[in-house]
Image (cartoon, rainbow, N blue to C red; front, side, top):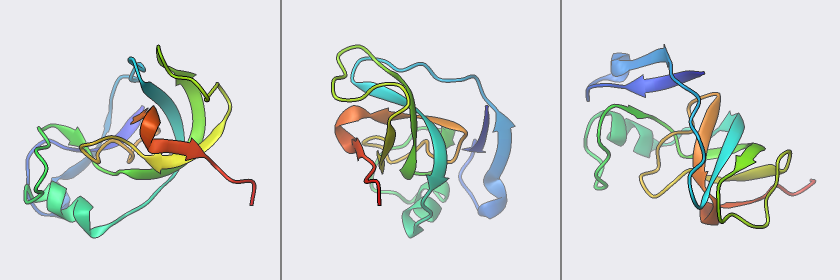
Amino acid sequence: MRAAVVRQVGPPDAIVIDELPLPVAATGQLLVRIHDAGVGPWDALVREGKSAIHQPLPLVLGSDFSGIVETAGPGVTGFREGDAVYGATNEQFTGAYAEYALATAAMVAPKPKS
């Protein structure tokens, strides 16, 4: 899958588009096929290494997203394959600038129909 990866902190050209393996949903996670990802000022802070949250490198930028559930990991209830969802990826607020992302199920909600 293609993703916007930061391997070292720095200016915008620190972001590279790379091919990564498709992630696998672990306990409490959803694997989401990303349709849209939000861009916020915190993404620049993460890229520059200035975030208050520890985010080890390499990382995929992006937190806010909408998409379709591909798989639900063990222990996840209330979501199934094909559900339209939106939310934030995880407690590190990374991973959404990719074709697929892992999301903590507790940080995701069903997408409203309108």
